[in-house]
Length: 190
Ligand code: ATP
Image (cartoon, rainbow, N blue to C red; front, side):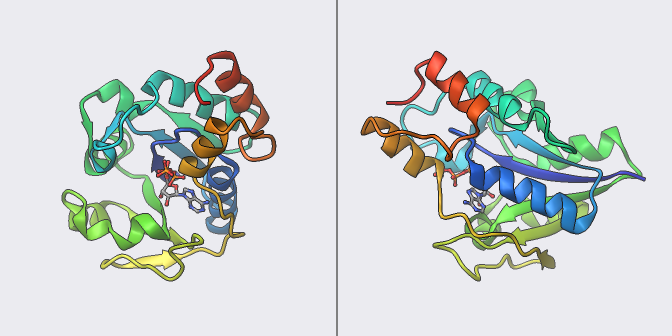
């Protein structure tokens, strides 16, 4: 029976904080795989102008996870199109493997706001909710059953990465090298 971690995000761009979470949670919970699921149109971020194209965000995640054991990129939300609701994603994973176990991985900032998510109580029934602390949101927890996994704290966000890029500052060591090469080639930020 497969044990799959679902780690959703906008990944605009993917950064080393995301990768650390995927690798540590997979190891700690002995998951077969952790999927970085790239949101098509995250309803939480509709107010943000200029979200990078979904295909570019996906390509960066694919580049970033290449060669990392048991960590993959998923295009399921982009393929579905429209507004992204995580509950639909969980249903798709469950339909694909009804006997598998799902683990929904959330940074503590996302976990703290889970009660605003569409059908969040059903989500918590479909998947085990896993929370990792994140600087700026330490100790925030969802209003559903969950477990906490210890992860090295990485004080980094995509917002910060974009701000440094806009200021013409280097992103080496912050964005995985293959993803950084893609974003330079496509001139995505800055
Ligand atoms: P933005 O700054 O654009 O809002 P972000 O850095 O928060 O982006 P997302 O792609 O929105 O990244 O996050 C996807 C998931 O990754 C969320 O569950 C979020 O809490 C988690 N996450 C992002 N960065 C970190 C980090 N540094 N440490 C732990 N969790 C993180």
